[in-house]
Structure formats: C-alpha cells, structure tokens
Length: 119
Image (tube, rainbow, N blue to C red; front, side, top):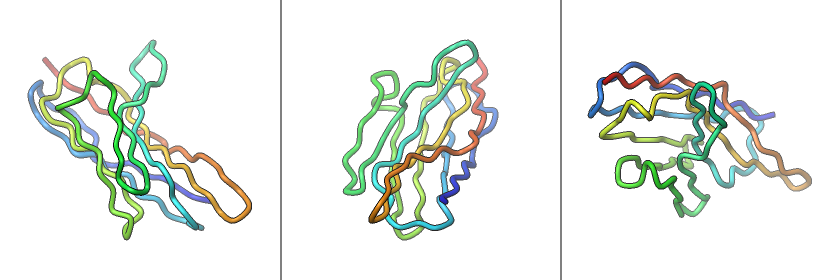
C-alpha cells in the first residue's frame, strides 16, 4: 500500500501564490507519473498538471504559465507551485500517483487539500 498526503493549501488573495506538496509513503516500489487534479463545487474533477518519472510535464490550458509541477524522486514528493492565483482556481486539490511493482500497477489518491482564492 502507498499513502499520499497533500499539504500547503489555504486561503490566499487573487494574484497570490501557494505551493502544494504531496508526499508518498508506505511500500513504494516505483512511482511512475504523478499529478495534481482539482475539483470545484458542482464540477467534475479535472487534471491540473502531471509529471512523468523522467520529468516530462503536462498542464491544463487554464493554468499554463501560472502553475509549475515538479518532483523530488529521492523524497517521493511532487510539488505544485501556483502563482497569479485566480478565484476560479478555488477547489480541492488532489494528488495522484501511478505506482507499479513487478506484478501490479495501481493509481493512488490523496485525501485532498482545500485551496481558496478570494477576489
């Protein structure tokens, strides 16, 4: 089993910045792609950014140029630096990791962290 725990969420004014962290722990064999998703009230969960094990990145159009995803493989941690935040970025942000062993492959999710951007 792998556990993911997000941190760094909170309340920030529009134009401000936050840095989210997600640390993986437990029986880690190989973490492949990791990513951040978000879900606003009444909306579907959507991909914000993802990063492969060799640091290739992918972003939602709505956050390109404002958010940066990175990872520290030695610490089994993925980060999301969020700049120039907008009220529409308000959501619960979830960390996601694709984990594999010799025999299995499974996606894990964190419990989420609330990000609120006030106007």
